[in-house]
Length: 111
Length: 113
Image (cartoon, rainbow over all chains, first blue to last red; front, side, top):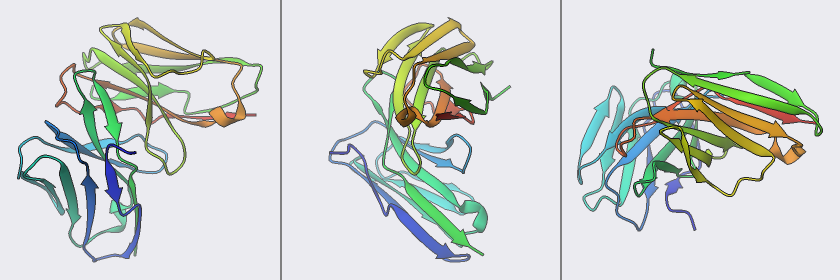
């Protein structure tokens, strides 16, 4: 079983639409991160959330950490073709420095 | 300098070849990592180096041999690979504190023929 369950796994939408990606677990985490990976590149850190109920905004992207720190969501408003990519949630495993990723959500935004 | 630089960007090698992947960072990060990523899948951890010492080996086959010559460099030596080892190999670095994110390189696209 996966530690982090991401949904949906694939999403294809038109430019201007809104979307939400979910990252769920039965475990409690001290922090959770979201990364975006474009084709042919490495993942790039978008945000780290650490407090239950926390909401962070990055331009048209809104990230929320669940009150119980078991889940998180990423909402994109008015998606643009430049938002196309693989979105990954991730958490650290104990104090090992090991970063564990969800299965990822592949987003395609069509012009 | 806020980058992790990986070379080469693309590599094609035969099953009997020996090659090396290189990774460099000058951000003063003391943790460095190798990840393997197959198409449309998340990265999977292979090795963790902390303060130039190997701290995690995720049961990676011995045909992959990591090396950390100093705090800025990380190598991955490859020998007798199989076609199923073809993947994107990502290097990353971080501060040694859990809430700091990783900085990833762009990866080496490896094809084993």
